[in-house]
Amino acid sequence: MLRIIVLCGLARTVFGQRPVWYDGPCGQSKYSDAGGMALPSNKMIVGGIEAREHEFPWQASIRRKSTDSHFCGGFIINDRWVMTAAHCMSGETPNVVSVVIGDHTRNAANAVRQHLDVEKIFVNPSYNPIRTTNDISLIKVTAPITFSADLQPVCPPERSNDYHYYKSVCSGWGTIVSGGVCCPQTLRYVSLNVTTNEFCNAEYPRDQISADMICASDNGGGNERDSCQGDSGGPLAVKEADGTFTVVGIVSWGIGCASGYPGVYSRITYQHDWILDIINNN
Image (cartoon, rainbow, N blue to C red; front, side, top):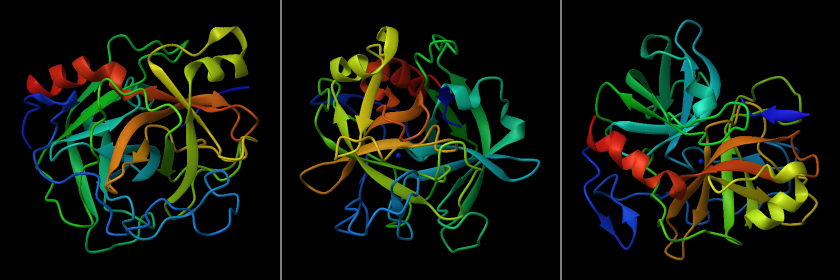
């Protein structure tokens, strides 16, 4: 069954094919071993573990304003913008959604947690809900985010890098078993390997994997780890040699959760021009 799973300033220039969404530090966790999955798997997110508090300080929760209920993930890219999936925001308006950042245990107060109102929502106009292509959306919040060690943006990817075979981390509050009830109280994450699109297409029927997608599966090759419902819109991030995290994908879709198929994510490098156009002109 196809699953739609429900990691200040303007962008100015590009250095080494990396768009500058934010001029300050990015992708830094206060834990040097962040994303290491040192603890045993315990069927969380599926097959992942609970994150430490603010281990992934760019993580965001997209909420229904009327109920303050989590329905999708997202991630901070600079002090006014949050990125998520198009299938999360299609049909939504700024007055009915909010963004929560600095959360670890959902709905539990902490000194870092901020509830942000939404000024604008941009869904990629090429988003196709049937094929789940161009599954990316940008949210502009009404006031600048103040950054700290516990709250900061994730780094943007290099446009020319396909990130194949990189080790990656996906984080979110999604269900811990396929078809389970959303959502666990604490943030969880899973370690995955980025695959080639050729490998991913061979795993899926009918050449469903297009150039705007990127796939990841578990390190053991059995696809027992995965993102799941409620993780949608969250980050797939790789850890660089300097310890910083670069976001390469947005949780998008898959067949089941950890059901033998790689997870499919929206490839951020493919959306480079659209992202910069939206941020520069809004």
